[in-house]
Image (cartoon, rainbow, N blue to C red; front, side, top):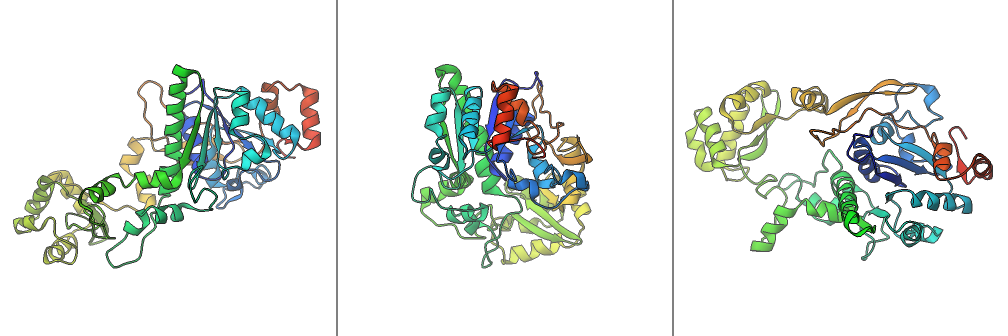
Length: 403
């Protein structure tokens, strides 16, 4: 752990479910000491979300959920009741010795409990406080509930996704939750920690998943700001509007064609002995050129197109199902599927860390914690003696594993 890049960073993660959990997963893999602050009831909701691995004895510990395990390896778990004075006091004592707090509540929740950002900053002027919300700390939607599909809908991304004339299509991954929330939060935290080295002061990082998702439209919005033309679903250059940049049906499935540059498109057309199609590169789906290209793609299997691309280098790849992708040469070579030992469950497989560092690579090998597994340990680190810890547990302001 000591040789990992974030081994000197301590994080209090008050979030639940996906966005905050993904952010702290990235930090934990890179060595940060991430302490999940969970309630004295069921803890993080995702602990109890199906599907489940086998092992009935893990049910009470909340470590059977595959979704929970995939987001929480390498972290520790502390249970506090923030509605109790003793729980709030313990949280602030922990804040004093930590570098980062991740907050996934709606704006104002922690303030009403008396442990919001300003109070935390009194306890630790250097704290980096990252609040991950749907619509940000201010603005007309600050208190509005939402999920990934809602954020994508409101920033225009969902409306651009899908075929022309068809319905909006939800992406297979959570773009706003992970891309607009978890990733942006991790980036914001690292920027604030870097600035703290100069100033000695922490600050609030206000992450809106809607803002983050909107930033994914940088190129689309840039073009709109330039020419004023509103892009429509299935008509933009990179989302269904050009013959050269589309998925096509093959003889046994689907392939993706990304021959956007003229050299790649020419390599494809010449490779299939159809130089006459070169001039149709930027025509729209439904055109004569599209029908001709679609017929060409249906004439070969996915594997034949893979081999064709190996020979002609024209940006054509098979569209893989998830099981095929996870077992692919590419994913194996990049170590993007890892195995780790989860107590009580044995070996489990998860996705690896996408950040590849040459000297201090991430360590995704540590298991996820049981609910409250580290409560007593964390309270002791915060300065509580055995008698004080026992009193917190007896009062219900804190809870250990199995309580």
